[in-house]
Image 1 (spheres, rainbow, N blue to C red):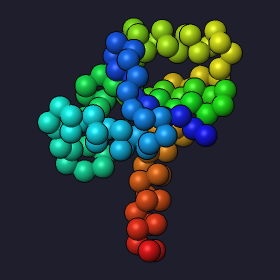
Image 2: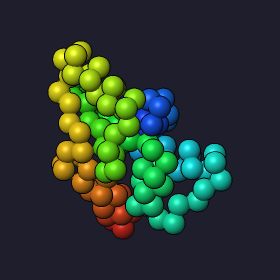
Image 3: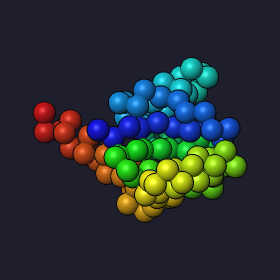
Image 4: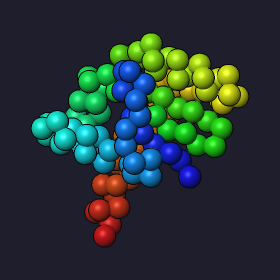
Length: 112
């Protein structure tokens, strides 16, 4: 199972790790009174607030933040490397996966 979360700029991890990133982002943004304009705005809003999108799948650690990682987020990456994880920072396949997941969701909705 893939554990998904968002990591704040100070290294705090938020989100129910079994929920989709978009659902986690929506919940967090709602908690601070922000309503994203659309699906992609969820990520824009989260990234602009210093959050990085994180997924852990077995021994693979993926982290994304287009604007670059904070000191605490870099430290988390280093900790995973020391622990023997394969670490992927802003990996293209991972960054594009949020768009692919969204497209699949739309297709699933249309087919139903």
